[in-house]
Length: 351
Ligand code: NAD
Ligand code: ZN
Image (cartoon, rainbow, N blue to C red; front, side):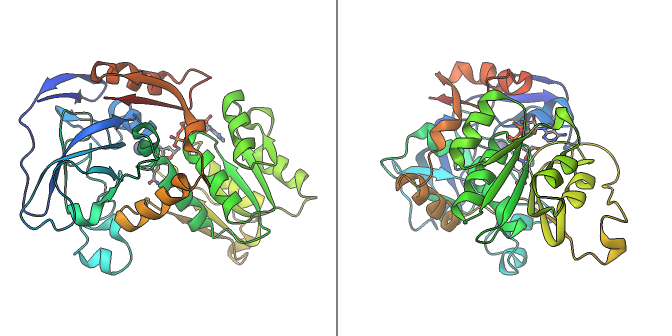
């Protein structure tokens, strides 16, 4: 089969590979749509996972079941399915402990385009099919379903990590697609005020549609200073970090109130340390919680988040700015993600 792969750090191209083998608990999927991600860019051009050779890229997609293993109970050939970017081993101790994303070691639930080939192939493999696949509702298009693989669950997980409550004032640092989904999730959770941090006009417009009440530009001054000014010097209740570099934690700690929580879903691609400002962290006694996590995957979550889309409570189509049709466009879509033209939010390729 054909696939679009990372050949080595800094280089991508089309390759031929064997169709993946299907184990007893697994499924083989023929993709209906795929979407490149900022994480693919980190993987290839920043070497964030270390060296990988001829590894098919991609972890956002949906498709049709092409083969199932003998133990798979609920899915059959021909079913249209969604699948998350993170595909845990649901019988693991980590999953039983409530951290499925870390089954098989820290971040071990991230298998696609990390430990195995991803979804940018003519076929892709899904482990633990009954636990990791979900039926694709008829009223969700394949392009929209791709947003349920990663952007929706990650942005929503940021809001879970930050523990957003009714009436909270929430700061979302970074309003790329992940941050936009954090804005939407904070809105659904009942935040009273949502301050988005971003500069691209397209993202700002969409952030407002998802519920952002205020916008701050990180290019026009310090984020924390601006957030403090907007809140009469009090600070915000919760911060979700969905963009920027390691330095955003200094900002986040300064911007959040005592008792507040910072939820990070940003991929920290460089730097050896995250710096926490001592005084603003209450000299160690400020009750300012800092947490960060890889999104959980799994069928239950996919079904629940999918129900928000199929019921019309969440419109993911606002993020689909660049649409392509046909397998050959995968390369173009990935390079778009790399080069990030100002009007881009998410590219998607239907197959
Ligand atoms: P993106 O690059 O499209 O968006 C990031 C946004 O942050 C951009 O709009 C950028 O302009 C903005 N930004 C840059 N510097 C900033 C600064 N100093 N302050 C504030 N904003 C700044 O990426 P995305 O697809 O939205 O993903 C966001 C992050 O989440 C990426 O690092 C991605 O790798 C990561 N991610 C994490 C998970 C997870 O499970 N935790 C899953 C998917 C993606
Ligand atoms: Zn992704």
